[in-house]
View (cartoon, one colour):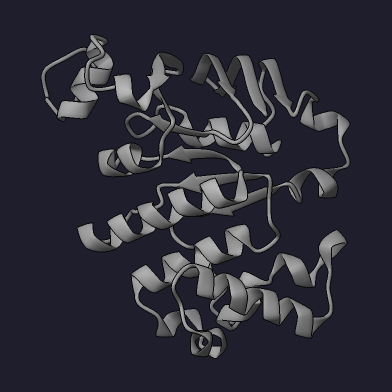
Amino acid sequence: MIALNDIHKSFGTNQVLRGVTLDVPKGTSLVIIGGSGTGKSVTIKSVLGLVTPDKGEILVDGKPPALRNRDAFLARFGMLFQGGALFDSLRVWENVAFRLLRGSLKQPKDAAREIAIEKLRRVGLKPDVADRFPGELSGGMQKRVGLARAIAAEPEIIFFDEPTTGLDPIMSGVINDLIREIVVEMGATAMTITHDMSSVRAIADTVAMLHDGVIQWTGPVADMDSADDPYLRQFISGSADGPIESVR
């Protein structure tokens, strides 16, 4: 479903991606791990066409994003943002139905509200939450609303950006389980970026370790703990000693 072939991207003198190559088969879940500033977000933005690579090729379902109708292309994607990114001035149901109320997917208001309430139920939120504002919800509830919005338009591809950031361990586990269930139910292709190893183990089919702009290791999540790659082993263990330099 998604193929990145030798992707390079620099911002001025800062070379962020130095030849990223990845394949994400349809209906599978890839998790990209790596330290801050290693290019994980730039990789996702490149797939979405928000960043144009300096070199290399990106294919989505066999075609370059640039050759597609922009609105139709983006309609295939759902996104769970790291900070929730909910609109404070809109009620919860309006946040969930944001895409359904606009653009090529526009639906009547009543129909969009019904879909929003159904998606809220799917992530474990009761219908009475629909008319609240985001500021009235806890962090875990806001994250669930963001997840409901990500799946509202039944996307083929879903991106998850640090889905458990700021959540306690119990709520992180709830969100991880929801993500896994929803991706499997929908048959969606998923790409996740995270530092949270519990998320990796719960969500991933395949893991890719990104460091210094290149993929240092990739393989099935079941092979992760037995891999002998020094970058991966240091990241998993959280050790200060290894090829990944810590900033002191």
